Image (cartoon, rainbow, N blue to C red):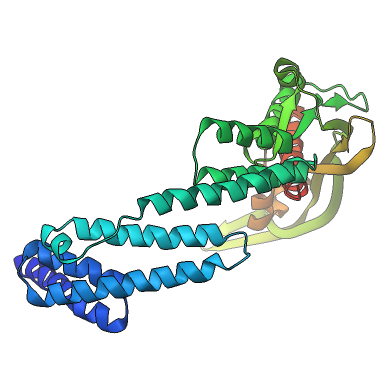
Length: 379
C-alpha cells in the first residue's frame, strides 16, 4: 500500500511539473503563464526565469484583452457588454494574481480594473432590464415569461430588491393559473367507496402540483384559489363517465375420459389369479371464467368565458380470468393430469368491487398524468 501511495504521489508531481509557466507562454496562453509564474515566485521570489516570463506574459495578456475590448466596443450586438465584462473580469483576475506575490507586484505595474468591471456589470444589467420592460409592455403570458427571464439575467449583474420584485411580478404575470374543479359523477354510478374517489382526486392534484415539469403552469383547488384571491386563466373539469363493473362470463367445454380398470379378481390358487377388466367413464367440464370491467374519465379544459381549449377521454380496463374444472362419473377414469387440472384452482371467487375500482383509477390516473404533462409542456 505504501508503494502505491508513493507511485500516485510521484505521478501527480510529474503531471503538475509538466504544466509550467514557460510551456503556457510558448503556447500563447499568457493568462495561465502569469498565474503559474506568480505561484513559482511565491515559493522562490528570486527565480529569474519566472520573473522574465511574468513581465512579458503580463504585457501580452493585457494587450490581448484590451484589443478584444476595442473590437467588441464597435459591435452592435446586444450581448457586447457582457462580452466586454468578461474581458475586464479576466484583466482583473490578472491584477489579483499579481497582488498575491510581493515579488510579482514589484516586477509588474499591474492595473486595477475593478471600476471597469462595475461599469460593465451595470451596462449589462441595463440591457437586460430594458429588454424585460419591452417584453412586459406587450401584456401577454409569453411576453411576461420572456420578461421574467430577462430580469433573471439582469440579477446576475445587479442584485437588488427592486429587480427581484420586478422578476416576481413578471413571474406572476407569466404563470397560467388553472382551477381544478372537483371530479363529478357524470353518469350517476353509485360508487361503493367515496374514499377511493377522493383519493383518486388527491392523486391527480399531487401529479399536477409536483410532476408537471413546467414552472409557468400552476394548478389550484377551489379552496386554494379563493384563499389566494386570484382568478383562473383556465378551468379544468373532470367527470367520471361510464363505469361498468362486469359480471362473470363462463365459457365451458366438456370431454369424456375412460380407462380400463380391474373390476374383479378370481383367485383359483395362490399362483393363479384371473383378473376381469371393465371400462369406467367420467365427464370433465373445464370452465374459463372471465370478468371485464371498464371506466371512463372525461376532461374539459376551457377559458373563463367558456371557450373549450381541450377535451379528452381516458379509459381504464380491469380484466380478471381464472380456469377451473369439475367432473362427474367414476374418479378411476381420471388420469394424473386430469387430477392436476381439477386441483389447479380451488379458489376462483372474482375480485371485490373495491379492488376493481382501484385498478381502474390507477390506469386512468397513469394515462391522465402522462397526457396532462404532454399537453401543458407546450406552454
